[in-house]
Image (cartoon, rainbow, N blue to C red):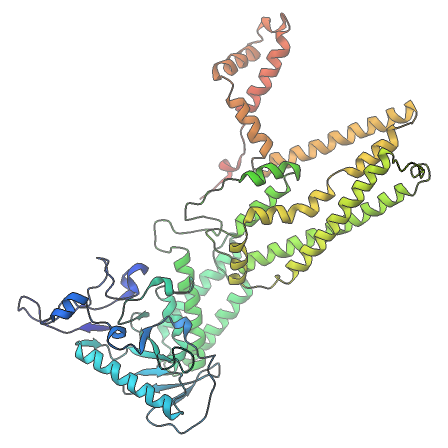
Length: 561
């Protein structure tokens, strides 16, 4: 890395303060002059500091040279520059494995992708290099020989002539600057300790050899990740099994290049290390609250429901609750895994396509009912029978379900292969509850039972007693079976529904002594329960007591660690 030269303030021997960004938290790695007490005091032992330095703080490269500014490696604009071929001196040209051209000043260990074959650009870069060298020497800063300086020259626009920079320390796998650097300038989660280093290693990979330690570290990491994905449905690994197998094969192939300059292999291995660093950071590896499963929330997030979904969920047959749980399961701590969200999108598309088919069948059934001559009597006064009105409502809901289903399928089919950042941006712009309500509309419209009302009017209006009894008995049995199925689904889901929560609140409002007293009467067969109609009251209170004492779920007994 680098260190500050200078004698102690008390006349003692020279001391060194070494910047090691990997040894400090993210809050203090951006710049060695961060005012936090945990930050390395880069200029602590300055020899005979001037009055101006005392007043303005430690020397800053950008302050003394306005043509410089500290940048994140992500903003390095190698893909956005027009290229012109011209004569080149002093610098060595290299070709990046992806095809980009960049230059290396071997004696000063400086990299840039500026168009140095343009004389004006070469002159500008040379002046900036001289300014940087003067700043380092004037302030007694020692840079380790392995430290690399990367320059990003603005060749157009309002900032033309200014140069972004960052320094790379290969020994500690870190990025640092000679200025204060705001964490807000880091664009996303990728900018983490170690992650930045591995992100920017490819432009300078021609100067680095592949080591056996790097290959062994990557092989061990990928082997564990492959096993984790294969055995755990809640793995925090972002890559799929096929992707991990491909990475492992690439690492095995790169092992043959150990000890050699292999820019292509080094570029690929650096990407793998970047993925590893990002994974460790977002899941708090090595911390007391490390995330062990992708559905485990680290931050304190409320799982409460808004009034909107609380009111609409019962009217939509609790369908939004199902979709809300699904969305919250894939969007924990604002982290999205592309593999899992693509599975959810595929599942939703299949679900909506099925609802479109069911709604089409129901639409045909309603049209067939209206085509019955006895139903559509064509009244001259414009009045319609209850059968017709119910069929009209059912047709409208079926058409609504079809249109909504088609729109949702069309909108989400294009998202089937989107990346995790794109999915995260989409979900961060929309409320999960609103999305849950929207995704449940095709199902809810299909379940409005308007066609059942039309059928009931057709069967029970102006029909014989025998017809009513037979159809009524069958309808009662079928209704009981449907209620039983719904009850079983709610009980076995392990999730508390809105009506059960309301019922338990009602039970909780009853004095506990009264419930216990009623339970004792029920257990011992108190003879007074048959006197003055108290038996019915006892049975009613016994129902409350039964629900009060019932366990919600067996999940806790099945949980293993």
